[in-house]
Length: 107
Image (cartoon, rainbow, N blue to C red; front, side, top):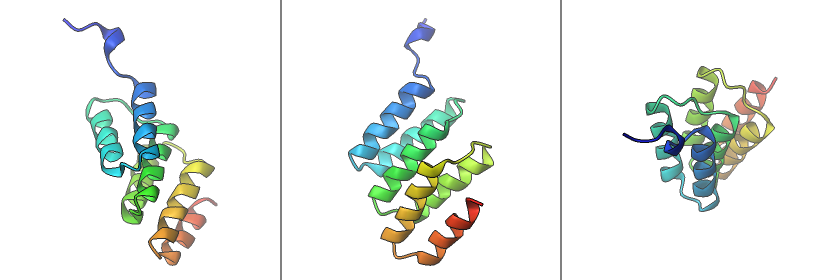
């Protein structure tokens, strides 16, 4: 039987997603976010923001917006880091209209 203390929690997942973000490994970051949710752990603003930032660094604007949408559906309130990363992802993808849409979501 596995000890509960050894099971990954939100903090461990968030730190790992952040590490993938810093390593520009957006696919792995999104994979961990999905695994987190499938393990019935609700990602927090840090988890989601790191995943959005990973998408931004990987120039995956559509993925970034998808994560932002899931975040809002899960009733996790995006912060300035979340929105900024999504806007930067749109900018890198040449999607200025989408960037304006994200800006509108902030209000």
